[in-house]
Structure formats: C-alpha cells, structure tokens
Length: 308
Image (cartoon, rainbow, N blue to C red; front, side, top):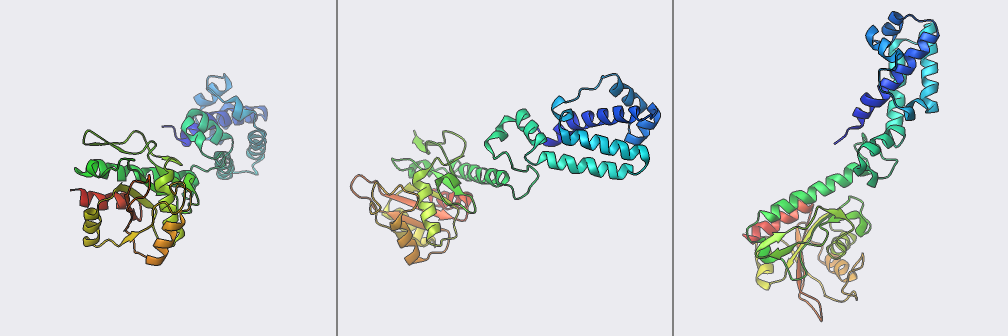
C-alpha cells in the first residue's frame, strides 16, 4: 500500500527544495541563508547543491512547479513572501497536483490498483466515487463473512448458485452493483466464494435488487437462496414481509436491468426492509427466494438467522 503523501515526501518535497535551494543560491543567498529560508539544515543544502538527493524529472519539468519555484524564490529574496506564505503556496500546489493531476498519476504508477478509477478522482475527497465503491466492496466482504460462518448456509444455496450483492447509493444498472464473480456454490457442504467482490458481475441478483429499488424499496443489499415453502413460512413468522412475483413474466428468464414483475409486486406490497421476494418457478426456471435489506451484511444476517 502506497499513500500519495509518501509520493509528496519522497519525490515532490526533495525536488522542490532542491529547485528552491538552487534558485536562492543563484539570487546570492549563502548556504546558511538558504537553510534558514527553507527551514532545513546547511548539510541538507549542501546535499542538494551536490546532487546527493534524488529528485523527480517529472516534477521538476512541470511548468507549474517551475513557476512556483521562481515566484517563491523571488518573494523570499525580496522579502515580499514570508516563509508561511511560501508554505501555503506550495501546499496549494500539492493539493492541486494530488487531485487527478501529476502527483495522482505518480501515485497510480506506484500503486497500479488505483488505475481502475477515473483519473480525476481525489484520494482525499470523502465523497469520492473511489471511496464509495471501496466501501461497498468492503460491505459485501463483511456480508460474505457472515454467510460463510453460518453453519447451515451451504444447504440454502440453490442449484444456480447464490450471490450476495450491494449497490452504490445512486445505482442505475448492474455495473453499479457489487457481487461475487462466478457466484457462491455449495461444495461438499461448504459455501465456496470463488473470488473477491467486483462490480457488474451479478446480473441476476442485481436485477432483482435494482427492480425493487425502482419500485421504491429502500434497499441496497440482496442475497438469493433456494425456495422452500417452509423456508418462506419461517421468514414470514420471523416478522419479515414476504412478496411473491411471477417467474418468467419478464422473458429471457427476467435477467434485464429492470424486471417488471418484481417492480409491480414490490410496488403493490410496499414492504418495509428487510423483506423477502420469492418466485415458485416456471418452465426452465428454478424457484428462488431473495432477501433484500439495507445493505449486504443486513441481508446476510437474515439468512444466517434462518440457516441455523
């Protein structure tokens, strides 16, 4: 794991300090005056002067960095810029370059996993899409841990497999829903999760969740299990609203982003979350039960409680 702040410390600051030290020396500053102006030791100034400190060409060649060094150097030399103002000016540029810019690109080079996100994202932004998607993935992981630890969950996995999903707050299609690639299967009595959650990999359960949301349900998480009338009765007895919809009415097995049969059933019932959706099967369609809740862990806890 590499933090963007490490890029600042390891690459940006040595480069800018080296450039400023050279700029001030050219303006007639002594080594001691350079050290005082930059708040560093004379030995550090000497290392910068002799090229003993590693610097970044990508940073030193950037026109904004060069302009900043010239502006700050001139201001420190004339006394028009205080050390505090110089610090602020440099910090402002750092934040600019961290936000989908030069330092963000250096960060992605040092930590390639970040490349899957839009180049404009700000790693410091608490509302960034990157943070939200990672929070959803984390939530699905927590839900999967609950299911794996539920002793009877493997026995509830249908023939087509289970999946646990959670969507982004403003989800509009399956690409906004995280789930398990390849689904969860019962392998000799053990629920097997093949890989880490990803977005856009669970069209079936995702379409159920998105359809329920289209109908106005306040849900972001869902999990599917096998259908059994006794299981539905147990869920109903536990206080969860149960809603039946017609299997196959949507055509093609109902795997589109929006499934009208689900939308109509949920809209008519208006259930509070968490609630249960189920269909009793049709020609070539396995009957399935779906638990929908505020998030993936909440849906997993419902299944855990009935699995035991």
